[in-house]
Structure formats: C-alpha cells, structure tokens
Amino acid sequence: MQKRSMFNLDYSYLSLPNKFYQLVNPALFSKPQTVLLNEVLLKELTIPFTNKEDLISFLLKNKGDDRTSSFAQAYAGHQFGNFTTLGDGRAIVIGEYNTPNNKRFDIQLKGSGRTLYSRGGDGKATLKAMLREYLISEAMHHLNVTTSRSLLVAKTGELVQREKLHDGAVLARLMKSHIRIGTFEYARHMGTTEDLKALTEYTINRLYPEIKNEENPALSLLKKVRSVQIDLVVNWMRIGFIHGVMNTDNVSISGETFDYGPCAFMNVYNPTTVFSSIDTNGRYAFGNQPNSIKWNIARFADALLPIIHPEPATALQLAQACIDEFEPIWYEKYYEMMLLKLGVQKKAPELYSLVDELLTLMLNLKLDYTNTFLALTNNTGSEVEKMAEPEFKIWLEKWKNTIKNSGGIKQAKKCMQESNPAFIPRNHLVEEALDAATNGNFNRIEKLLVVLSNPYHYQENLNHFTVPPPTVFENEYATYCGT
Image (cartoon, rainbow, N blue to C red; front, side, top):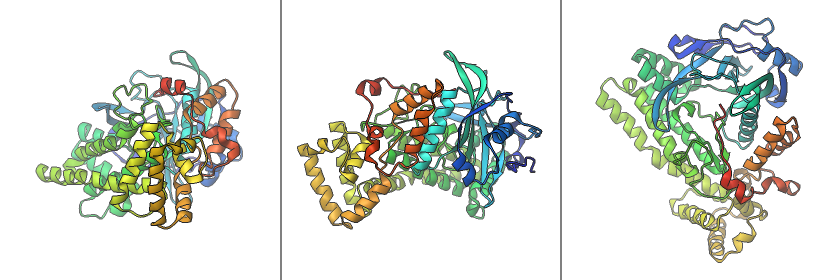
C-alpha cells in the first residue's frame, strides 16, 4: 500500500493482528515552525523535498493526504524489573519509508497527540525534550553507534503543561523498526501462540531474512538479538554513554539505541555513575549496563519459549543455553573493544589485566573517561598531567611495551584515533545549548551539532568542548524521561 507522494510510504506492520497496534491520526497544527532540520539525512535517504515548508506541511499540516493508516504500537515491558502493559502514548508511526536501495525505515512523530496507550497523558512533548533527542541521536550516529535518527524538530505553537508551561514540539524520527523486546512480551502475555508466531515471522522477514530458513527460527532470532544488543552496549561502554532507562520496552530488536530521555555521558570514570532521576538504586548505572542487557535478553527468551520448542522443558533448555553463552561472548567483545581503545589489536586474554588496571587507576585518581583515552591517543588534554602520578607511570610502561610487541606505535595510534572520540555531548554543554534554544537562541545547539558531527578529529581550537563540568554540576545533575 503506497499513499503519499513525498515519502512513498507503506504499512507492512499492519499485516500483523490488529491487537499489535491502533490506527490513529497524528495531531495536526496550523502554524508549526521548524527549528532543526536534518538536511544531510534527508539527502542520504533521497527523500524528495523542495523546501522545509513542504516537508513540515506534509508531516504536521497533512495537506491533502490520507492518514487513516498511521498507527501507534502496542507493547509491554519490564520497567525497573516490574512487568506492565504499555504502548506508544505520544508517538505515531505515519508509515514505512523504502529507500531506492530497498532499506525500510519507520517514520514516527513524537509529541503527536494522544493514543489508546497514553494512560492519562496528553500525548504531547516539550521542545527541550525533543531537541535533546535530536542532539543526542545525531551525536550517537557520528560516534558510530547504531541509533534512531532525527529528521526535524518543529514547534507546534501550543503550550504543554508539565511542572510548568513549556513550548510544545514534535520530533520526526527514523528507525529500522520500533519493534522491541516489550512487543514480544506483549504477544506472549496478551496474545496467543499464533500471535507470537506472526510477530516472530514478521520480525525475521523484515530485519533478519537471512535466518528465516534456519531449523529453529525463533531460537536463531534470540541469538541474533543477543548479538546485536551485545555489540550495541559494548559501543555504549566505549564512549561512556549511559542510557538511563534500559527497560525491555526500550530495547529494540533491530539493535538501535532509541528514546533519549534520561541518558547522559560519563565524565569522571566511575562504574556506579547514574544521572537518571528515577534510577534511585543504580539499576542502570554505567557499569551495570552489561548485566541489564543480559537480564533483558533473558526476558526476550521467556517471551519466545512457546515457539522455541513445543515441549516446555526442551524450550527452556535451549533458551537457557543461549543465555549462558552471554557472558563469554560479552567479555570477549568488551575486552577486544577496550584493547582497541588502547591501540592493541591482539585478542589475548592475558592482556585483559591491562584494561582492568587502567580502569582501577582511573577510578582511584578520578580521571575523566573520554579525556584519559584522548591523552593516551594524542598526548593532549586535561588528563596528561595526572598521568605523571607514580602508579600511572608504572602502567604506562607496561602499556608501551605491549604496543611495541603488537604492531608498533604507528598502527596503535591509528587504531586509537578510530576508537576514542575527542568530543562527546558533555552534559553541561548539552544543557546550556538546550536552555539557550528553548529561549530562542539556537546558536549553541547548532555549533554543538557541528562539533559532534566530527567527534574523532581532535582540534585544539575546540578545546572548550573537551572540558568536563565543574564538580558541583556533576554532583547535582539529573536527567528525566521527558514525558
């Protein structure tokens, strides 16, 4: 089914049983105003538009287009360990865009009004929350982390009531798919085995067609999602990213990072670092993210049990074997990544202690995570002086000897420059940019977007963007879900 000329959208998700979605029209706005537009992404996707007025008219004014096939998705989820039914309470998929090279993306509007799943909410979004998602998702893309992408942020011309009145806004974002572990939990607990089979078949055909002829497609899907999620969280750990709310409804089957509410970036290295206002027990702290994703994959396995094997004991045995393989796979990929950050391409378990010793030093000396690796890479930045500490000098000698024996300094530096960003979205810079933008000044956010579009290229004249925040900011900073 293809209805709209600009995006040429279709709706394969609607082939699923209707319990998986609600057909709903997104809210329309008479005078929306685009404040951020991702022209580079529009060109990459070859989305035809002559000007931003045409685009915003298409997305938010709906001039002459039939929206009867737009939909909100139903799903469930374990939120901080507790199971609940959920759904898109303020997000509506207006359709699926197929690129000329046959890649499919959901186009979703966030802040586009109430749905069946709004649970008393207004379905709207604040300008600051949508600007945050645009900024962080684009930064993550340029940091080489799989992520949702943002097409635009537009002010709606309405005010949204939260703790006070805020400017309302809509974000248009893209993902390969918004199917999540929570979608499968919904199918398992609120549907039939046939519903679960339909969702599994659809997901495999859409995202992982290479496994559809496997002997046990459901088990293969479990292993595939385990793999892409390990790769994703390893990448989070590489750049010091803390998602903040790793509930199963925020874990995508496609392996994309999404929903940038209480996320943040770690400054001083500490595995217990938490910035989310609702994560009072540190469930999703930086260092707990590997355990959290393992727990979430186990919930995915639970959801798939009825179709992994008709005999419950056998299904459980097969699923448990998959979960038991998580830790050896995780440790191999994690240490491989951390050694690459140190310029060591040799995958030898006897070198893992080099990583562990460095992290212990960083914790004890309260070193900045990003800047420590930047100092090792370029011998520049705020942490160089701290590396003169006696205990750090001992580690440095061990590291230098390791590099000599594993390819040499030139090869190591190239590897490190590809693995260690110079620029990340420092929390205080993000907040300064967002506060200025919500007051009408977009200069800071536009400059920050430019710097973060080339995060691995260190430039001395941009040193301001590498400076960590004052301790008082770090101690008091909290992030929120943005609803």
